[in-house]
Each structure stands twice: as C-alpha cells, then as structure tokens.
Image (cartoon, rainbow, N blue to C red):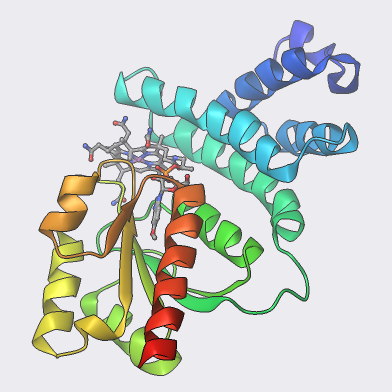
Length: 234
Ligand code: B1M
C-alpha cells in the first residue's frame, strides 16, 4: 500500500468518493477496507441491496474486465473475491428477513468443474431475503450430488450456477438425467451465471435463465405462485 493510500480516511469521503475508493480497495483485495466501507455506507442509511450492487458488484465488474484482459491474474482475483466475501458477510443478515413465512424451498449449487461461488452465494442470500429456504450445495456439483439433494430436500426449485463456457453444458447433463429418471417436472429448474443467456436456458430445457440475483428472486416467486394456482385449481 502506498503512503498516499495510508492517509485516506474512508469515513471522511463523500458517498461517491467512498464507492470509487471501494472499487480500488476491492481491486487491491483489501478485505478490512471493504468491510469498513460497507459499514460506513450502512451507517449512512444506504439500503443493503444498494451497497451490494453498487459498491461490491460494481467493483467486481472492474476486476472481471481486467482479469479478462490479462491485467489481473488468479491470485489477485482470489484476493478481490475474498474482500468481496467479507463485505457480503456483513450484508447477509441484513438481506435476510427474519420471521418471514417460507415462500418455497430451493436447492442451489455451482456445477461440476466450476469453483466460482460468489454469484451463487448472492442468489442464495437474496432468495433467503425473499423468504425462501435455501440449501446451498457449494461448488463443483456432480449430477449425483444434485439428485441426492433433490431426493433428500424435496425443494420446489433447483438452481444451478456456472461461470465458465466449459462448465455450462453440464447443466444440460443434470437436466437430461432428471428427464431420464422421470423427475424433471417435479421441480422448477432455474439457471444463471455470466456466460449464459435466455437462449441457452431454453436449449438445455431449464424453466428459466436468470440474469442476476434480483431476477432469480422474481422468477422464483412467479413460479411459486403458478404452482400454488395450479394446486388450487387441481
Ligand atoms: Co474466474 N473466470 N476463473 N475466477 N472469474 C471468469 C468467469 C471469466 C469470465 C474471467 C474473464 O476471463 N473475464 C473467465 C471465464 C471465461 C469463459 O469461460 N469464457 C474465468 C476463468 C477463465 C477462470 C479460470 C479458468 C482461470 C484460470 O485458472 N486460468 C479459473 C477456473 C476455475 C474453475 O472454476 N475451475 C477461474 C478462477 C477464478 C477465481 C478462483 C480466481 C475467482 C473465483 C472465486 C470465487 O468465486 N470464490 C474467479 C473470479 C472471481 C472471476 C470473475 C472475475 C468474477 C466472477 C464473480 O464473482 N462475479 C469472472 C469475471 C466475470 O464474471 N466478469 C471470472 C460477481 C458475481 C456477483 O457475478 O457470478 O455473474 P456472477 O453472478 C451473478 C449472475 O451471473 C447471476 O446472479 C449473480 C448475482 O447477480 N447468477 C445466477 C449466477 N449464478 C446464478 C445461479 C442462478 C441464478 C442467477 O440460479 C438460479
């Protein structure tokens, strides 16, 4: 860290300067500074969701671009991810409503061969915040791991995340296996991750592709209300 950076007192910056500084701190993987920045924005009455999307996800987008362009490498990106997780840990309880009636249940995990989990964690947090019970299977999930969890947890929704173009086809392997076993229609399957799109979601037989965590929540709620209407009609 340079002397100049040493001198910066985060709480003395205005909101715009602070967010810009948090982008820099996330880029530099400075977890404590990110945690401090998150706490300051919350003290300034920022909504937790705005802190998440504007300060943390915004900063991670810059990291992602420089990773893509070969300016940053895996060790630096890991530090940035670690700093982001520090900020997310503070926001998590604030995004999760207490005592809300359970809207539904979701099992979510990142697919086999893929260790990216920040987006998945964010989706899980937002779903919990919206009143869903979330069973998080973590990363690198095989078909068997998903199927075992479906059998054990009987969720309404299966969520799958993939961040690599090489791992996203594995979602189709999971869905095809569900079809083979005759259980596909027992669940709503939602998929997401940066390299996916709507077309891909349709092509692999998912119920919907979710662009981000907020869309995942909206889509999950929509499918739950359809399910309730069907049950009421039947
Ligand atoms: Co990785 N990585 N990475 N990486 N990494 C990407 C994905 C990449 C796009 C970077 C780049 O080149 N620009 C690139 C993939 C290129 C491609 O496939 N075409 C890439 C690569 C190449 C790799 C490695 C192969 C690098 C290497 O080793 N040479 C390697 C792969 C390891 C593996 O998985 N086997 C690797 C490793 C890593 C780290 C470990 C260093 C780290 C992960 C740390 C962690 O997750 N714990 C990492 C990171 C951090 C990234 C970037 C920079 C950021 C990802 C992220 O967390 N974004 C990423 C670049 C990028 O995406 N711009 C990159 C923030 C997060 C909030 O967004 O995950 O998109 P996202 O989630 C969103 C939505 O997509 C959606 O909602 C979320 C919230 O709004 N969503 C869902 C996600 N999952 C969902 C599930 C749902 C619904 C919505 O279910 C219902």
